[in-house]
Image (cartoon, rainbow, N blue to C red; front, side, top):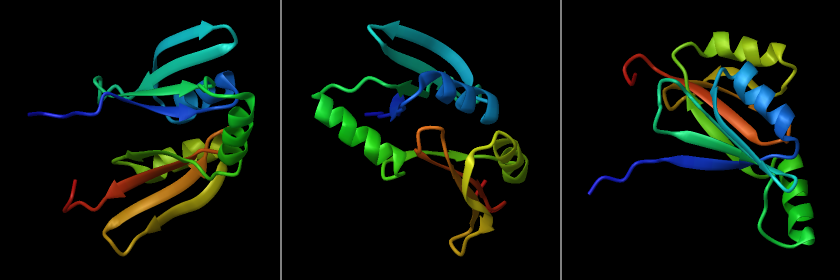
Length: 137
């Protein structure tokens, strides 16, 4: 039995800002953009992984109080976002820095054998990028 990742969802506050960040700063391709009744589901992904999608959405099934709680948690950076691999961490870090994103951690060599960095998307979601050591890539 094979089990593969198809998509993951990232809760966002402003779909337009989020699309600009994930498409322009991170270089992901726009695959779909669906709007309905004030909500949007924007699908982006890496050209290198055509079968994996990230859905950026401001839709939340629940009460208005649930929505406020999630919005507050996302804005505080308390929700996990997405983690990426890159073969050129420094170049993508500079591109993200130039976009004005909030930097959480500059590229750092970690003791477990990777080099990584972290920043927040426009909604406050944590985004990490790592570049595994040559022995692991």
